[in-house]
Amino acid sequence: MKYAIVEISGRQFWIETGKYYDFNRIPTELGKQITLNRVLLLNNDGELLVGKPYLDSVTIKGKILEHLRGKKTIVYKMRPKKKTRKKQGHRQELTRVLIEDIVIN
Image (cartoon, rainbow, N blue to C red; front, side, top):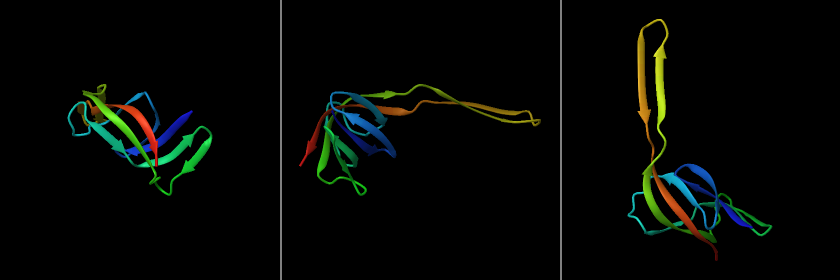
């Protein structure tokens, strides 16, 4: 089993080939190839490679499938005994990326 732990848009993801993941919005057009090079850890069938902080010899190839918006989250602020309430909704802009290959140089 080959997987990698990648840092993208300030968060860390466990990445496997053939699966798709939702990242924060990446401003590129649909169908374009992207490469992820901030690889923190790689497990290549039991052989562990750990970066300090990143692995320079590993790149991950992906394809942008679609741009979408996440689930709505409700932000509710209330000050007790002051009769002030503020209800606000937020939907995060996301990009769905299909991971095609993990390349080791």
